[in-house]
Length: 373
Picture 1: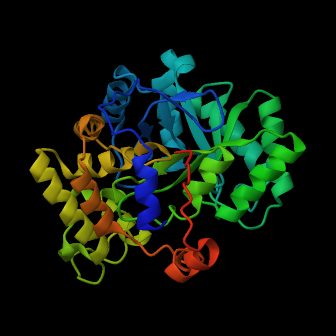
Picture 2: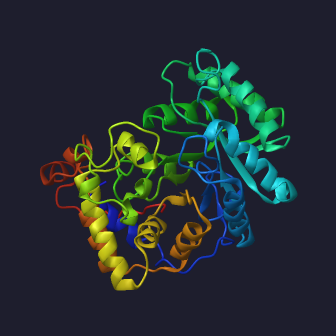
């Protein structure tokens, strides 16, 4: 999205006011109410070598729920299934009050070709396993986790609709999928009267804004609420990494199981992302907050994004993150953050925003555009 388009969209949004976790928002084209920040559980369990232990995970869960938080995100293979198991135990007494979202696609048994992927067999078996681990007879929200590029869209949609009709799943979502495929899925679901997608989970933060030209407008138009994952770029935006940690510097080995290795593997730690983190840190110092709070507050100011997903590993990190709900960024802060993190919109947006293209389409006419944001 061009800077001009982003300015127009933001001007249509009321100035960000202090929020609480119980200032609920409707999720996409549904009446489902969710908190403005979701609690992620990818850190629940040490199976991957960098998560948290069970007592600390419980403290994180309890702190989130006690503040009115109701939107909790997990996946079938987070920490090899441990995250779902712990979440099922923690959520048992408040199950009806919580919105539990999980995902399918990841391999459940390495070497078994049908234990992962987007197809019906994988979907149904994964949902059944998730129901057992979560100690519940229904999932509030089921995401397709990653697009496998192999399964026919009709098979995916019909299998999802069958699960909804059976009462095992209430709502449907999608993540990590090309924009044209999501639009195709939603259109087919509408035409055939199948259960629609109401949620889109994607990577979105100051260092990763490539969703803005296509994914965010598509979600707004087709009724998908947007949930951002990794809102702190895996910790890069908190200021915990420096240029000494960049790949190739020798400080962090090329392979391993630490969180730093994951950040390297995801490509989140770059000179550009560290430059953005420098600006985030400067603004945090001006406001008397933390870099994490500034990075999260920026997302809360963005039109079209329902909620970021917090991946706090400790109780202290969660409390720090939640303080972003009450941090207000002024127009100068937003401009600085937008400028340092700006990314080229790519084709065809780069062509359509050129003066010659605008002149050839509209001449000297002035046409007011009303956005739905």
